[in-house]
Image 1 (cartoon, rainbow, N blue to C red):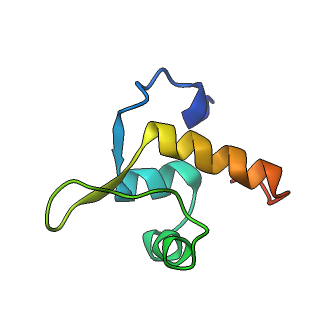
Image 2: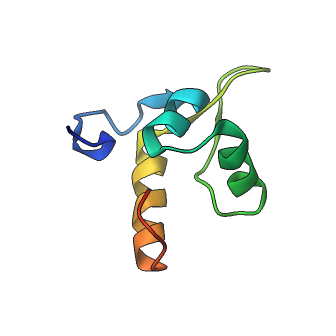
Image 3: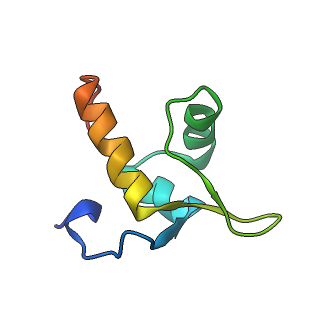
Length: 73
C-alpha cells in the first residue's frame, strides 16, 4: 500500500479536511484539536464551511513531526 506522500499530488493540491484526517489516520476532532494547540498543519479555508490542507503544508507538517521526534502518523 502506498502512503499519501508517495502520491504525485501537486504541491497546491488541497486535501479536504476529512480526507486529510483519514489520510493521516486521525479522527477529524483530534486533528482539529492539534490545529487549535499549534500541533497541526496550516489550514486552507475553501469556503465559509469548508477547510482543507494544501499538500505542501501536509509535507511540511510531516517533516516537522519527524524533526521533533514525534511518532509518524
